[in-house]
Image 1 (cartoon, protein in one colour):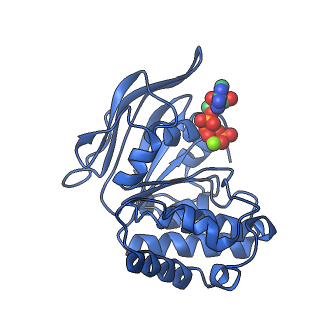
Image 2 (cartoon, protein in one colour):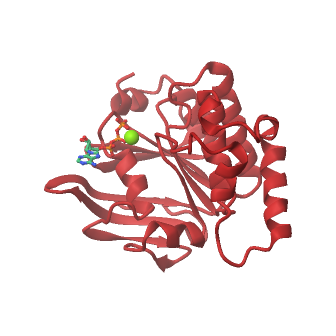
Length: 245
Ligand SMILES: Nc1ncnc2c1ncn2[C@@H]1O[C@H](COP(=O)(O)OP(=O)(O)OP(=O)(O)O)[C@@H](O)[C@H]1O
Ligand SMILES: [Mg+2]
């Protein structure tokens, strides 16, 4: 299936990628586009390859076929640290917070890059603390002492320290209480207003429909369908078909 066109040039374009884990063929020609500043959802049942799609974009697994571009430039076999420097942020499903490091130290790991002046680093820290007041309050606390929702915020905040053009967000609301889910939705809205594109993998359908402009539906390692989010309702048959809810 060809991906729908976003204008004028997609920020990230995934074209027919095939990805394996060992001999297991997981992605069977996945294609999708994310426009600059666009929030795009990727949904589908457990095990269809959503996380593998994000990992393929981030260079954590290497597709054996197909092409991925960022701002028109091929990035298909680039290592994750280079992609992070180019402007791709990634927040994995398991968050990967350093539990023994403080909130501040966790954020600073996102700042370890050459050529960023101290004043700029401070401005970035100030910006994420303004986004996440709770992290500012807890800046000297160990990451492992934060609640699940706060750890998710810390993971997103750490990705923001690299000033990404796009963040790949893997199930950010999984296991969170409803109050935290709304906060994550708000954060997605703030990032969107700030011009950051997001590829959002979520099981929470109402949140996905509200937060995204477009949605891709995956089934068994391929993107089978796409839709404008505002044209779908939570009870839409297409949601039932691809999520079985
Ligand atoms: N490291 C791995 N080695 C081998 N197989 C894997 C590995 N990671 C995932 N898989 C398999 O690849 C398939 C796709 O996994 P993936 O994590 O991409 O699915 P998903 O759509 O994100 O599912 P979920 O909703 O459960 O997060 C699954 O069958 C999974 O068991
Ligand atoms: Mg997954």
